[in-house]
Amino acid sequence: MDKHIFMYQIKVLLRKRTLLFWNLMFPIILGTLFYFAFSNTNKAQFFSSIPVAVVYEKGADQNFKTVLEAVSKSDNNKQNAGTSEQLFSLHIVSDEKEAKELLSGGKIEGYILAGTAEKLVIKENGYNQTIIKSFLDRYLQRSAIIQDIMTESNGQADAQKISDVLGMSNRVQALDFAKGKVDYILIAFYSLLAMGAMNGSSMGIHMIAKLQANQSTKAARSNMGPISKHKLFFSNLAALYLISIIMNAIIFLYVHFALHVSFGNDYLHILITLFLSVLTGISFGTAIGCIVKEKESVKISISTSLIMLGAFLSGMMSVGIKYEVQQHAPLLAKINPLNLITDAYYAVYYYKTYTRFWENIATLTLITVLFLGITIIVYRRQQYESL
Image (tube, rainbow, N blue to C red):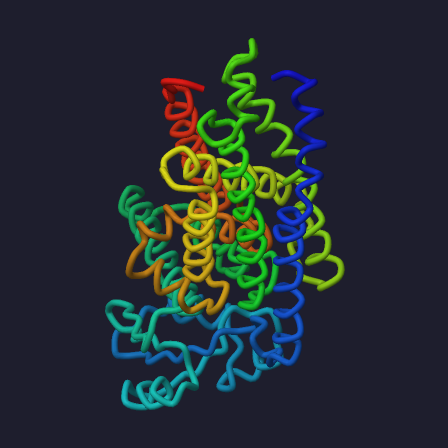
């Protein structure tokens, strides 16, 4: 990288007021509209407890009953009825017919048939249904582990060891679901930040246009100079990256402090997401700029269309779309950069562990490397008969 070219490109970029204004102000204006649109949204969307019904059939596992009621508040159980921060709001019903009526009436998210085997019945897929299923899967997994321990020890296993595995004393903590409360509205704002980062693609396209000798006389002079293509490219990329980081940091600060959107307190992982997402957006634009053989305005139209589609699929307009895509087209969710960015922000805010966060970051890194790789290969191979 050449520092003189870097500083010169910073000055050039700062003169692109219209482009900078659009990339900065559009997410801010849209975020403000979201804020006013959602300001009167029912606060009940904040997660407290998931309404679930259970039918204890003949032969029901007593351990399962104990665990389920330990993590639930229930109208049937006065001891737990006033407890907050419980995972489930439990309705104990006498038969499946009553459970079906509650489900069809929208009073519960699903019901569990607890007999010789536990079975979950739901009406539709969604976030709450995923949590119920995860709870049930975790219980069945740990029950299998306990059975293995008992088998290996011929029924003489240490009681403390089994208690530690089962974790009955604090099942909610054992599940490690949340360090923040579920708020579906946050998905829209996180997706907005993802769109803001990906909007850097328009500047990436502009950058490539100024480096291609057949696009402008200035670019032709640059290509005839003694500076290598790689040095030109990375000097321009560094300047653009710095400007984009500043712009997206402003957007983040506005959304976080002015609109009071919560991201949690783990600013290190938030910054990792911010820095990587900005690079993804720019590299997406440079890849389109190199691949598409049309004028700059057409390239920007293509990138903008793809970004808006990605924002829609990542839950900006409706969080239900995001989960429908994850359920029925998981590959599409995994290759959509905006969904990965949105999911990374949400993972930092919501989950206690960082497994999901790093999965999103790893996939996003691979996509970014792919975009940059395509850009460098195509840009390096471009030859011109005359300048």
